[in-house]
Amino acid sequence: MRKLFVCCVFVTALGLPAQSLFTRQPLLERITSSAADMDDDLVLKRTLYGPLRADETTPEQAAQMVEAARRRVDRVQERIDQAKEMIEQGILARNEILPLTEELTYRRSALSLAESRARFLKELSEMARAEQAFDTHEDDTGYRPIQERFDGNGQMSASVFRRVLLSFEKQFARPLPISANGETAVHKAMGFDHRGRVDVALAPDTAEGAWLREYLQREQIPYYAFRGAVLGRATAAHIHIGPPSTRLRVAD
Image 1 (cartoon, rainbow, N blue to C red):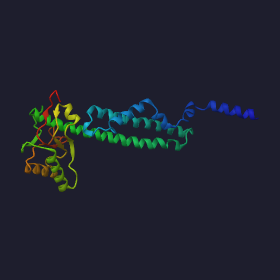
Image 2 (cartoon, rainbow, N blue to C red):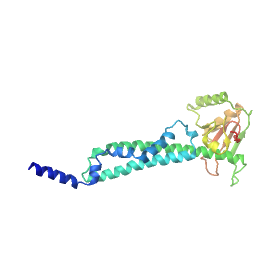
Image 3 (tube, one colour):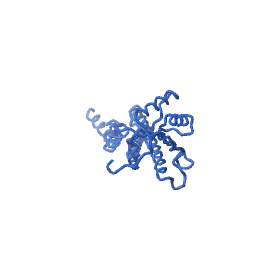
């Protein structure tokens, strides 16, 4: 009888689907140990979680960052969908997919952060293009993106900008929304020397934008106010504090 029982167990095991035996390895571990997932994780460590500031990331790196984060989400979602089918078949217990659902939440948060970073870089790029259009006098529609230019005394130092920061915070009880402080990867890629200049993400005609322009005029600090890079669009609206960005030289 004992021999018969052992034989029955062996035959039953052979009859189980191969997938059910394979699932003994934790579901999440099968994803995180894959070469593709590890490669995407490295991309995020270099870009999203790396030492680079947001404005030091190039548009190409931003695209790679979002794509890697999205693939990581899709990978876990696909595994969850497969696991749910196995639960319905009685192959897996429901609690076995809990690590996957927790990981999916984490990866979705990373994707949201990556997309937010990419949107910021897109806006920064549009701001730079607005300045580039002014540098070439007008864009192909004939629309001048420059709204206002104030030369002041032509100077903008770190100590001067600190006064701007403190005055804005005192007036509005929040930090000045800086989108680019000095050189950025976007400006450099477009051939502009943005060192010693600051871009502020304020539309010139808002209450905060109007206050800032008045303050800069009163303090004789040079600035350029942009409504947008393209007629009818306000995505690149900003105030450039400091002298105009110059063209980078080859030596730079």
